[in-house]
Image (cartoon, rainbow, N blue to C red):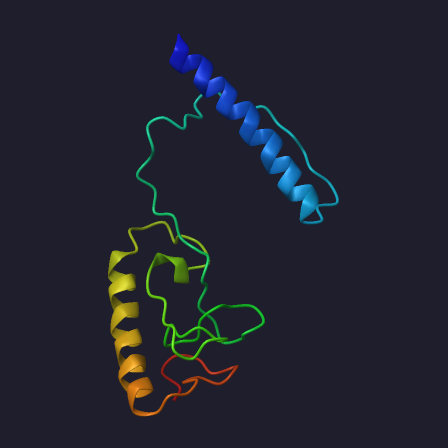
Length: 127
């Protein structure tokens, strides 16, 4: 019974906080809906959570370049699922491994010549 109560409290707090955050971020409209019966934060699900340091060719819309080097800090490389804008529906392990190889190429080049390795608009493999 206590676990059911805790779940209910978490749901209420989460909905209120999320709405407050959205308004603070400038949301014009929020639509509060009741969570469905199957929603459960206990136990944690085995999802592949991604995003946060998205890869891209434009520093205005991405965090890292095609070498996984942060646009704003030449000496920082970020490798992982955070480079995806969203999960493609499959386990991202193989692609994250490919990202690691690409970043290793970039780090090796960076150690020889401390600079930003990609220009805005440059796509992977084009250099």
